[in-house]
Length: 272
Figure (cartoon, helix red, strand yellow):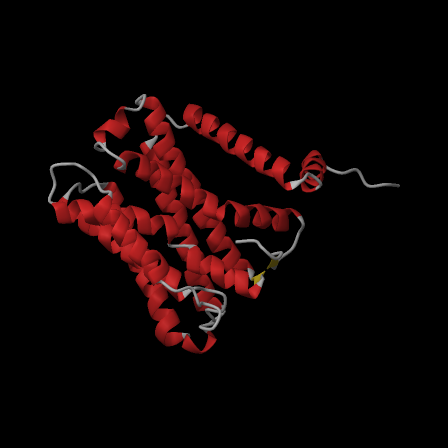
């Protein structure tokens, strides 16, 4: 007797058969539907930002579990962790001198765990670090981000150094995951804990992006005006969208792998 497929499996099989353009369209529609749903079920959209930080922290906890249980950092990008530590440190500085709130506490906790991960990779588990695979040149992102921060930053009444620092952490956060994606691109095989961590980053990025988009919608654009004038308000929104789309492709293959019952994620050529 032929087994009856579940509705979810049937829909997923149909999506897999569609051409790339149709998949891209379905992804956009799904994202918009998720935004509409979040708008109605989350009344205080600041909670989305807190949720994004919480999911990021969960991802870091998955990394800590991997490092402590398996005693290996294979598949992890030290450079991504260092970029993350940099933008978190800069954002903490901005929080202390510009606006101290609950986000500051969350950033402090995330920075602490990120520094611990860096310590483990650099010193305790150095033998398993894939340095040859972690070959993304950091100046490719650091230099453009610094130049952008100097040219395009908030037009508030704060000190110019603080405004440039604020812009820098926004731009760095948007691209901090690129070295990790390069490692996965080089290895083609992503073990479960690393895959869970990167997927958590993708979810966190989406929630953060949803927070900004819904804030703009709810204030009918007044939030963009409050952020200042010129290109800065648009750059904030673009940065949030960019970091979401950077991880969208990986998240698709992660979900596909989970539904397929695969413990190890195998990425086809050209992904990330």
